[in-house]
Image 1: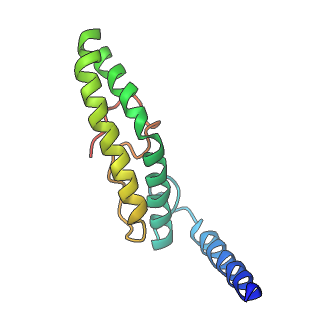
Image 2 (image 1 turned 180 degrees about the vertical axis):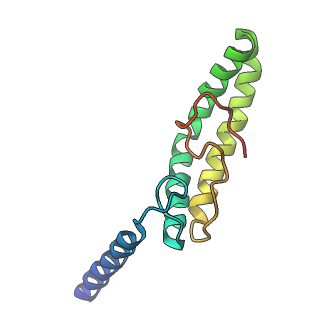
Length: 124
């Protein structure tokens, strides 16, 4: 039985790696993943993991943005509250995107990654 499990694992690995090789053609969609089913699903999965893992960076981002646009007092109050809301939003949407990556959709958050356009407030 152990050999069957190993053989199944190797076949699955080859199957998924060959699918990514075929899907690696670039058509200009999103971040270079292409626009086929596998490419869009992969992009959703990657952005979901990244957003779930880095959602906490919305907190300092929003404090900095609010401070730059207003004053330090606004940054430490309104920016803090806004940062907490965006942190929860980006993290929850990231987890949801990972859970539903088999249904390919465009990114739910703009910018798709926290490090893209750091000077722009996130929108959903």
